[in-house]
Length: 499
Image 1 (cartoon, rainbow, N blue to C red):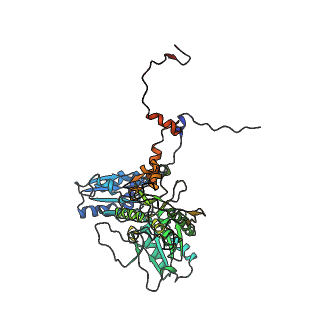
Image 2 (cartoon, rainbow, N blue to C red):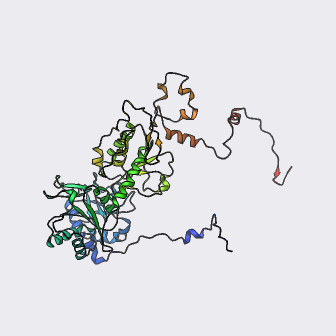
Image 3 (tube, helix red, strand yellow):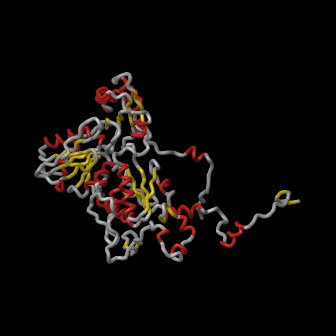
């Protein structure tokens, strides 16, 4: 008979020293390919033409190994009085431009290397260098031909930014193969040093535009995504699930071509999260970016929307998110993350409370208390489009409904309270013997600006906990108010015996 070994409650410090941590180290780019991969001549020409003097070079963690080589190559081609600064370890996602770090060195321009979410910025001129990864052109064209034998079927080609350099060649090869409707996306970046492209072009992803032929509708188009699984692919699936006929993806790393069928499941999960946000009374606004254009306007927009819905909001700035940080705020019912489109989607089940996007929160708050949340399948990440939505929440009830009548929650399958967590000021009561007198002292303390706040009450009650032995009766609490006794001589000795 064997006995199960017991799990130790603690171990020695050697375990920490010997613990293996995951590594994401990438191979260094050969010196003879630095010029090609990082577009040294093109970048140096822009720096010299615009007379930039302090230039910040932002590298993601996986490309920092090439930072010294890139700096040396640029130094050889830019004017001598040009200062170059390397930025790493971004405050939020590496796909976003870190303008805050660039301001620390008074940079007048920033060069962003690697994958990018292409979110608009409004402070510094940005030069994007995505890199040039290899791609098997013949393989992808052959697999597209097999999947779509009808040469007249319209295709919309969307690429990960690291494969944007290969997209024109893919589109040209498909046209040469006889395809009549190949729609390729192009970059439309407001980088601060170029004029915007044609505003009549269609755009459903940040920084990308495409022009549909007159006789083609977007609903009959098949979207072909070029790139490995990434936040860009996830965002593309979410934003285009209800717009195009179907979505396929080609992974250059594994040479696999497949139809994406997970977007509908993902949208249903997001609808469940919206329902949870609707039932929430205290909402935390988490700042997930300091560089995306109009993020401050969006935060003000969300606070107005939450307030008009009778709910309480708190603002958090905590850098990169993780479940441990979020779990410290048990009084928050749901969080809304203000971040770029590729970082705002939080699907991890490790988070203690639901995390929604600004658009999802607007759906939850602009729904009447006794109606179901409308869901058309749309999923918006653009800050400007969310800001265009009404700030005011929907009218809570009609005249024939009770203001605090509960509504049926699709999350719990039970009736949930529709009452607002923010109460009117206690001073508005007219009867001295009314609810004011009945409120406990703890409830009265939980006031913010004359309004009752359940989160403030939660914090106030938690702050009054004094450790073990504090669960005594109220009668014993009164002893604290009695006069102190006089000091007396204590006993001397040790625990085994006193004098």
